[in-house]
Image (cartoon, rainbow, N blue to C red; front, side):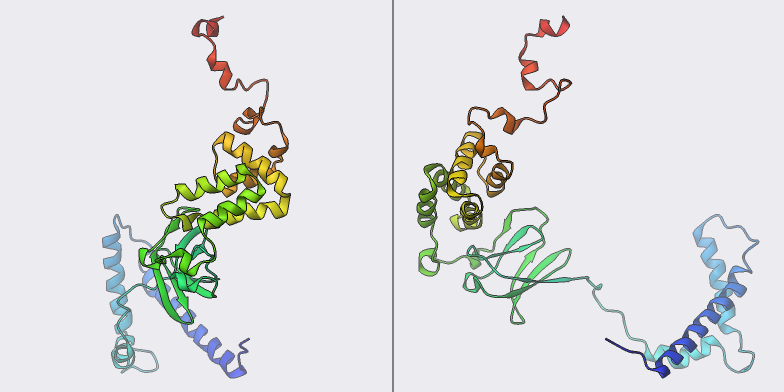
Length: 283
């Protein structure tokens, strides 16, 4: 917490008064002088303001006739000026992150890779509107172009391990075998997710999330949800979680239209309405 000293407050008050006085002078010399004139484009207005501004800055002070604002600027301010930065200031956000076993970290619903050796370690992410940088103990270990596509991954090839069996405890076969202890349908969902990824490790996060649902809802309900997911051909953690959250796994498997369709109402025709022959629409 920063506490201003009385001297600091006094200096701030004096500086504020000088700024307000300068605004008042500009209003009297420029705004008031132009109040009765009409301008039809910005260039003419700026030209008129520039002429009055030069006159105002060159006008001697009342108590110091030998000094003007222009003279003080040339003697005091200009020598102290420094060039503007070559690059514009970029607003950045920081976030502590920890890579999952798929060696990716999550930044606003998108996943970015880091070197696989850093799995499980505490890292820091710095992200802007254009880039994402990952730091380990102050050293940058990964840099990515920012992506706004949710629930997808940006992966650098060099971050991938040469052999997952050599450094990871988890393998695709182990995930599938573990899923099989829940049930054959759950194992099939996990197998499908791994096969659809460009590299299996990209599906580890989703598969572990699915298997964790057994702890929340029970293995029996997860298997029932997986059976429904296979019939609906939806293979993702979010789909299974939605089925369980809405208790759709406890409904008969034959009643799948309720999973696909919207709310029921007399004024909503539904897809079967358009299965009628064309002449029936005119009756």
